[in-house]
Amino acid sequence: MSEKSALTSAEVAHLADLARIAISEEELARTAGDLSSILANVARVAEVATDEVPATSHPIPLSNVMREDVVGETLTNEQALSGAPQSEDAKFLVPQILGED
Image (cartoon, rainbow, N blue to C red; front, side, top):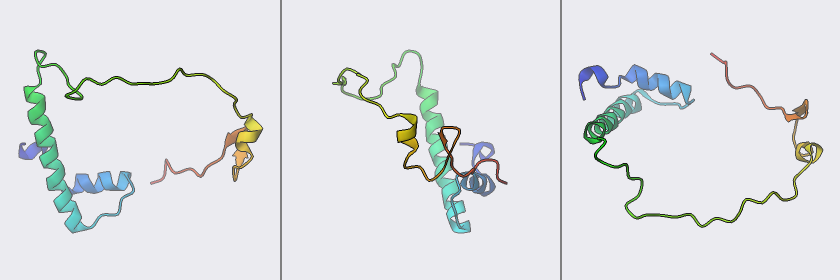
């Protein structure tokens, strides 16, 4: 991975802030190195992946054993909202967390 594409501590701090994760300066430096290494390995895999190499999610073929999706008895709006601390316009009312600086 080139120096230009390596993550900086400032970028990791920004990501931690977006994820609302408290992180120390020591952890920032270590995490920046770890994430840069991960990105370098992903880039190497991307170089190898070609149209001739089929995508594989699991080495052994899998099949899901699932029942039919049958709609059963459902709750009314009033029943669903009966245990909510707050509701408004027939919806759950929760504190806003996005849009904060």
